[in-house]
Image 1 (cartoon, each protein chain N blue to C red):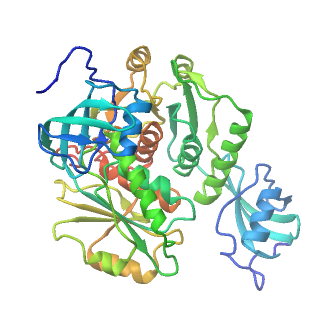
Image 2 (tube, rainbow over the protein chains, first blue to last red):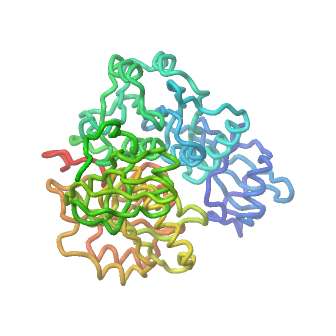
Image 3 (cartoon, each protein chain N blue to C red):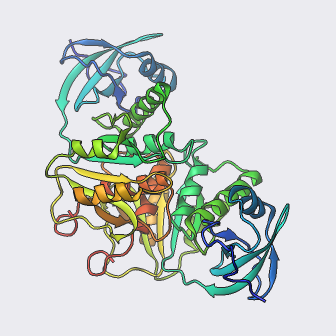
Length: 250
Length: 250
């Protein structure tokens, strides 16, 4: 028995979209993760009967109604929908200076990047660390909630450029940030996948530049000054996230 | 007597552009600030005879030759040039969530924003603090160096929107980030000044939206999800920093 619309239910009590990787079918009841339960109970001060949205991070969006709110939170799935991904963007990035990666991960996830792929470039590898990848995943989940997205950003383990190049799909549009490149401009039709590559803080080495050119990456200028790695990555991701303009640069 | 080209002088010893607000004319000798001296002597390990570039942050770019490098650093001005500002961008921004402003200031300065204007919006004022404005200025100087710019970003004290609106120049192009706006697209010709406005973390209140609309701000969508204040501000600044494309969106 759905209590949708029951007296006292508040639509806007929970403004962010919850992350529930194990969403069931309509009618099922799920137990929120401790993080989501904390957000619902402590941050939003929601109560039983309130409505929420949740996603499994793989495109399913569910309408929920809270059944019980305490140390744990249980919710009934009222309905589920499958979202379609409107655009697919991969962002490849060499290592920035220390301490500048966390917010990059957060911002790329907010902007809806499908996959963040760290590149291990010559002489400038990413620092190793399992803790970091857990932390990055938490940041990506927080951004998913905040931006009410349906797809969780995938985060790859660092790869050398030549290995990353093997993962590209045939019809992809390929861009590499380069102060000497041409002004950023997309083609008439959006590609099914767009891949943007940014060098490490010292820039791509000559060998990697050749590899990118051979693979068909188009050098584009993002601004009229030198940008730090993480700034260039965010600028490129912002450009790729701009809504399409049919007939102009869509 | 200029020692330009003297044996052992290294062009690339000092990759960033130094900030020297009191640059003199060609032939004069200046004492670098303690911060610049530290960078030159400790970070770059430069030595007397090495060449450098400096700016006063107001468009003057000077070629320098180091005269002495010790606890202090003195340099001779070899030549000076006046840079022309290619584009002028003001970024107005309501208060983001706590702790998210510092990197925003750094990134806006890297992207070449002329003026960062914090907006005190209804119920969401910026936290007060002289220390913060000194810290922000240091971040802007560091970005000036890093991006080799000729103009230091100006940072305004927080203003209510209605006061900020009085500072707009007549021919300016005005943009406000809005998820319900039209896709971002610039007009045929670049305006002499572009102003981008982003609401605080709770969004602009209805009254401020009306004020922006009455002033001629065009609502533009920056991405297909909700963006945090600082992410939206950076996305808008990145878009405004894209090199112009004549005949398409230049």
